[in-house]
Amino acid sequence: MDKKKLIDSRKYFIFKIRDLVNNSFHTLEEKRMESLLQYMEVCISTYDELRASLDQTKLKRSYEGLLEGLDYQMQMHPFHKLDLYRNDFLHLHQLISLGNESRDKEIHNIHRGIVALKKKLQAENLIDCYILCLTSEDTFKGMDCLMEALVSDLLYMGHSMTHIFDFFKKQQQEFVEHNDTEKIIQNLKELDKKYMPFSIHISFKISSTSQIDQAIELIKRQFQVHTNQEAGIPSKFIIKDSLIASKEYMALDEIKAVDMARKEFQSVIELFNMWQGTQNCIRDDLWYFWQEESYYHRISLNSINNAKMLNYIDTNYKKQMERFLQLRNDIGNENTRTLERVLYTLNSAKSFTVQNRFLNFWSSLEYILHPFPRFTIIEKARVVVPEVFGLFYLKNKMNIFWARLTYCMEKKGYSEKYPNLQTFVTDCQDEKDYSTPTMISYLCAEEKYNEILSELSFHIVLERECRELIMLLTEPAKAYKAIQEYFDSIKHDLNYIYRLRNQLIHSAKDIDESLEYISFRLYRYVNSVLSTILYYEEKNSLYSITDILGSIDATYQNYSAKWSEDTKKKKSSSSDSSKKPVSIDEIYRIVRPKYLFIE
Image (cartoon, rainbow, N blue to C red):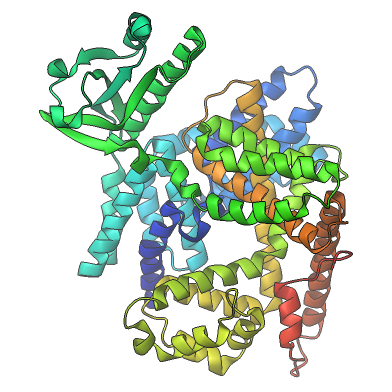
């Protein structure tokens, strides 16, 4: 094993995972590795529904899609490299990969295998398994999958995302001080915690004197209610005449306990509003308290609101609304109503509960894909959404690299310390953002990109992103393979999301906290399709949504076929030592393909 590759991949883990849990550069929205335990739960419950259903046609298709998604998850999951699980994953892969008729005969054996494997995973210490994977993983791609799976499992265990972020922020600081990757990996054991009690206190007021008794009676069914004098919280932190609702929660960290209290108290408020036909009669303070012995810690709800990760909605929404308002007088009524409905839903998202946000995002996807000619919404989504992302795959990687690089280069003294990087940024910069052809010319010329790489060693994540872009732009066969894998990951993710949506609506199932972060991905899917439609509507208001969706499909099919054909030709002529160089214009059309019929 290459020691340098091992050290570099560990450093990459330490610095990249903080971006992931903070959704920096939208990395959390690109997380598609789920907790295997959670994925298996969905598969098992779907199979049980399938067996009990009178009409199995739709559920059978849904279950088959889930199995293919589970197979994809297992093949990408870091545990497939462990001796403990390698043969289990392989056997299930072989069964799931069978043809339809053969797989139908094995469907019960597949189900029993998933049930048993889930129990095996539950019996093991998952943190120890991840530590074992981290000590041996020496590729950046493998580390990306490991990070996503680890975060998903930490959420599934019951950690709050805020606590996960704080933990990895601390590890990054410790690495900067001591440069000990082995110690950082072993520190993961700190996340192997037991549930413990947290006493949470909520300050609230009741605005209507005539409804005080009814409100307190309802709150007391869930919480203990005290005056502040009884609770003992310092009076300087409490609004005058407030009451205190208290309850003990079993959680892995205080942030999770506070969030549990917030949700429960909000459900009491909503129940009271429905019962009394009122609004804002019960108001909780934005500051919650958790008690540690005799000391009270204050936590602002704004600081633990996960919807803050969607703050960039404001920027995107403003840009989209400007485009929409310009089009409003030109485009047909059908387009106007659909686009206006989707824009309204996305803008209102932060005020929704997690479940309602998730369901409304899916409804928005249904609205916008409705004209596309397929029989069901999931068939429409499985075609259009991965195609939109596949066509934008390389450009998106360039955008992230550019955003991260320019953010770093704005720091004091960096332009003098890294002159080659500063020259690269200056040459690529244009009025809007950066010149795509200029960046391509740098990353496809060995002499130029070697100068860039020579100064990127200070930032392992940037160096990795740069090397990946160079590979994708100079080796089309690898780029084509990466796009196909990306396409498949989104297709499987949509199957999973659609099943969660159906369980939420039809089965009234309670879904764990990861739904919050799955809804971020769903938002990104809706927003990307919407942005594409608005962009081309602005160029030519005569285009209908159907025209643009049809163009996306045709363009991707043409794009994929061309790459596949070029790859086969390259393989057949690989013995020929002379290679035909690819021009910057040709590479530009790979990065930014021209949309058929509308460009």
